[in-house]
Length: 128
Length: 135
Image (cartoon, rainbow over all chains, first blue to last red; front, side):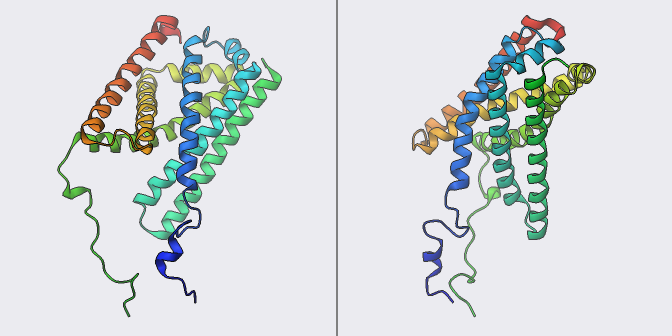
């Protein structure tokens, strides 16, 4: 049995022992997404067209490919953090909460893997 | 036995006790648009995977995105994107301790909402002007 008082145990890093890291990661990805998001919107508007060759050529430009990968990473991480908060707020049953979070985490990882692989494939092989 | 952590304590007042104000709607809209964008992420991934899967898959995806119903959905997603972005900046301004007073928070709420509507309209206007119906 711990001799520390309940308040003493949650001060500093808090009851979950991770402090403000969730909150902070959300802010870091937010700032990244403001920049990367605006870059992507501007890129869509400057695209010469949406034909297959045009899009492939655009993705294959190294700078575009790398920024796309960063955009995907930031989007998926930010989405995971945000949806996690929503689930924690509204899903009350403990078991259901865990299962829902498991599903949501897997879904995010799968989406990230697919999107990243797609960009890399286009970047490395060009027009198929 | 009651300890300091198991004792029944008064709960903080929940949503239902407050008078409805539009700043509340803006606040919940941040969450709603965030969830919508998480779904939109699937479409973004679908688009990228379609490009990587070759010409025929890509044109299949392009037809899908050109469907009128999907277009309406995309306009919705773009609004969600611009609203969440602008309101996110509003939130981060609050994090610095600025703009929290009632008057400032209401004003920034209006700016963010109207800004999101205007940016969405501008975006699709530019898309239409640049690509016509072919985008």
